Amino acid sequence: MMESSTFLKILNDSVLTTTTDAALHIMDILRRKIERVMVSDKPFSRLSLVSVLTTLSMIYGAAVKLRAGAYRSGRLISRKLPCNVISIGNITTGGTGKTPMTLYLAERLHRLGWRTAVVSRGYKGGAEENGGIVSDGRKILLNSAAAGDEPYLLASRLLSVAVPVVVGRKRYDAGMLAVKHFKPDVIILDDAFQHLQLSRDIDLVLLDCRRPFGNTYLLPRGTLREPMSALSRGDIFILTRTASGPNRIGCETLPNGLLRGRPLYRSVHVPELVSWIEAGQAMAAHETERLEAADTKRLAGRRVFAFAGIADNSDFKKTVQDLNCDLRGFMGFADHHQYADRDVAALLHAARQSGAEIMCTTEKDAVRMAPRMQWPMDLAVIGVGISFGGDGAAFEAEIVKRLGGN
Image 1 (spheres, rainbow, N blue to C red):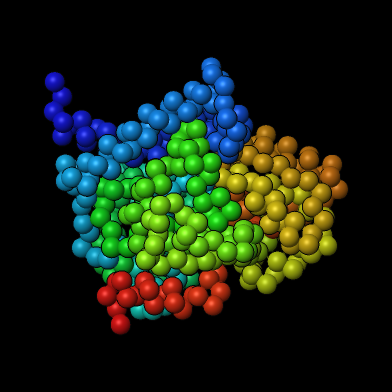
Image 2 (tube, rainbow, N blue to C red):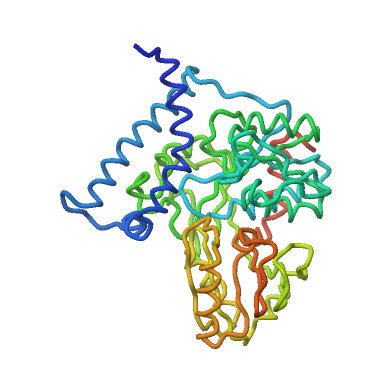
């Protein structure tokens, strides 16, 4: 019979992978049907897709609880890196703003004098399994296919502050690679709230204020990666997209008082026009015009066709509409979609049919397109920034205090 320690190790590895891979695989295959179920609050009948997903979510939840209990009891051990570690994560699938928050925190820690590195899994990248250095802070060393689209985006944006980016499914090994080459004071783990294999000093948990717990069901019936009780591991909580949510969400509205006594900050997403690719120009980063956030005004009044393949395409569509452009059409793809020639042909056909003069996409989508790809019309690339408003200084002070700074 298999020893319990061996079983727990296998469970740990499999559940960790399930948290991202299995859920995303399910959404890729049955995306439209399942996504409707995952956001639905309606009761279900027997022998339906909903009932099947609910059963699977119960099995998944039992496995997640067993794994978490094994870490609490010491049967599974979290490894410690020889530096400060900050995890940025969430409790649901989808986009709560982890990538822009990672950028925000890395830039500010660097400016506060902390040697900083970013470690990401490198989901779907060629270097995911064995690990690799995406950027040494001075130049990009891995392309997007090897690094994964989000780590490549992070590496490109963080060149301005010389923050290196390392990828690897085994975050401890990736962290040690960063320690060996860059000797950071702080490592930021991108999307690691569920990665209990690695110890951290601060757990930042992001909650989308519009629907912080989805429909309250676990995967795959809902969007929760873990039961809401897992929030007890969090140290600092950040409500994102507060500009588009209720006027006030406080700890008293969150479950079982789990957040009471812990810092809770509110943030908003700020659209940024990060690059403008002229008609006939290649997608390669060095050939694009880098811009400032204020240049979003450049789209005002223009005829635009937008497209995206991110966790919440409707959110990006609304972002484009809010830029006061004339949105002639929109096309959505699955999260992490890899664009083929036929996709580009369909997009261009739809854009021309709509009468658009400019195409518009997200920064993450631009990373996933072939660098030599050329567009017959201008392409605006929209990124996302984070703003804490007047609470920015308090948030930074909280981080520095917990890291042991003055």
